[in-house]
Length: 278
Image (cartoon, rainbow, N blue to C red):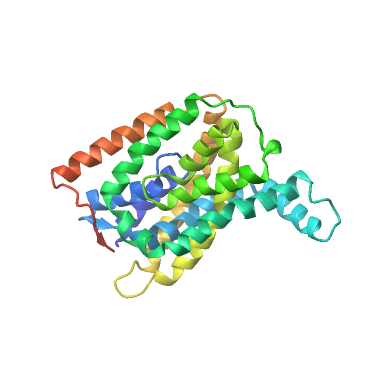
C-alpha cells in the first residue's frame, strides 16, 4: 500500500465510520475501484478504526471519565452500582460481549469469505431497509437513563452484526436502539460508547498483522489512522447535531444507491467479488 492510497482510505474511514453506511464496505469498494483491485484487508480496516475510535474518546472524554471513575468506585462500594455512570460502565461491558465472542469465533470468515463484495452489496441493501423500518416506526421515547440490562445485550447483538462488511456498526446499533424505542440521539450516543471496547480490542489484536511480509507497512497505516482521527471528530459532532432533528432517510437512500452501483460494477466485471489483499 502506497502513501496516496493510505491518504484516500484514511479519509474514507474518517467520513464513513460513524455514519450508518458501513466504513468496511467503503474501504473495500474504494480500494478495489481506485487502487488496482486491492482490498485493503481486515487488518487495515481494524487498525485504521483505532483512529476514529480515538476520536470518540477525545470527543466524549468528560463522559467517559465519569463512567470509568464511577465504575471503579462501584466495585469498592463507595457508590452504589445503580449510579447512572456506574451502570453505563457495566452496560458497555455487557453489550461488548457478543461482538468479542462472535469476532473470535468467526475470525477466519471475517478475514476472507465475508469480504466478498456480493455479501457487501446484500448487506448494504438489507440493512438500508431495516434502518428505514426502524426509523419509520421509532417511538423516540427512551433515553439512556432507561437503558436496561436486556436492552444492553440486544444493543450488543445488533452491533455484532457489523462483523459482516456492509452492515455498519453504527447503523446496526442505532437501528436496534430505534426498534427498542430509544431516541435517535440516545441510540447514536450509546452506539459510540459501545464501539470503544470492540474497536480497540479488534484494532490492537490486528496490529500483529501489520508490517510483515505481504502485509500493509507501518508508515501508510499510521498516516491513514491519523487522518481518520481528525476527520472522525468532525463527523461525530455533525452526526449528533443531525440526528437530533432529522431522520436517517438520506442514509437509507445512499445505501440502496451504493448497493445498486456496486452490483452493476460486479456484473460488468469492473469490480471482482474478492479483491487482492495488500
